[in-house]
Length: 117
Image: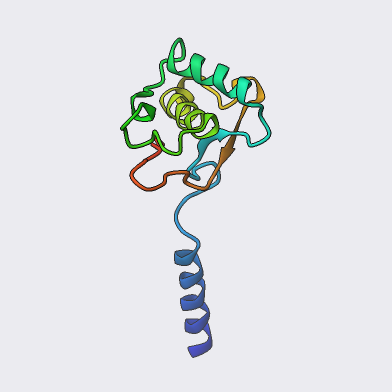
């Protein structure tokens, strides 16, 4: 009997340690692909922050996500804002191949990247 109880306890510990998220429920963010040229990133920023409807106020001067002031960082923020808002309604993380999905939270310092389940 003690061996059976030990097996049950070990199984329960394993289940608890693996978390409660099932497949497809991992947190995902949309960021700029590191291999994308700056002019393509800028085109993506322009679309996301304009016609796309992303809230790009946080990547403006003196705002939490302005620094580092690079096209790649600003594109990542804009792409993610768009993706989080519209992914449940058909929005994608594509941006003409300029973006990619990551499961690593890209937030840094005071710059918080939203995740919406």
